[in-house]
Amino acid sequence: MKKRKLVVFLPAHNEEGNIGPVIARIPREMGRDWTVEVLVVDDGSADGTVAEARRAGADHVVSFAANRGLGAAVREGLAGCLRLGADIGLMIDADNEYPPEEIPNVIAPIREGRAEYTMGSRFKGTIRGMRLHRRVGNICFTILQAVLLRRMIWDGQSGMRGFSREAMEHADIIHDYNYAQVLTLNLVRQGFAMEEVPITYRVRVHGQSFIKFRNYLGHVLPAIWREMRRPAVRRGSAARETLPPAGAPTAGRGLTAKVEREQRYG
Image (cartoon, rainbow, N blue to C red):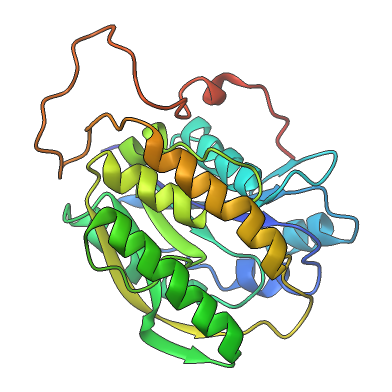
């Protein structure tokens, strides 16, 4: 019997002090019918992020020559999962705030066929050390997504997410700065079934977040507006509409064309 594959990918920018422990804690046993590989997308780091990732056991590393943004790194991570033949992809931040030990829980709804897109939810689980202004910002952006999608969402900014292969094939991140809001809007509007899984979260000890409030608003709000103005082709299991006929135009770029881009793996 052919084994199925989980690819865990980590977008990383200057995470030398954090990425090693994250990779070392990623479970490599998911059952005898599964294999697990780790992919790091180095977003133009100027420190020892790549060396630490390889030392900790990363199976694949893709490096950008310069910093392109978290959205671009996640886009490349999803495309990399497809190139590597992943049946399920799991994204986890490299900052050591999210629990690698709980990866099996986050992908369980996908393995069991209940969902095609999952998010590790801090607000359904436990949070340690998050400052008040960050908590308020997370809640506000999550409420905005919930209103736009007309469904309950607990944690729209989570840095730990699981994807079925079909969800990875059709995910479309329309800006390079970030991914969190537009990715959820894109996949849920296409009809991919989403489930949130409680996780344990603690604020980073080393390094600093790239997020600055004014820059975040200036990039994210226009991207949300652009995403919501685009027509959505209904594809996922939650879709009630029929698929368009062969050859019909689709809403987004998706990742199909991007899979063909050549990347050098280390």
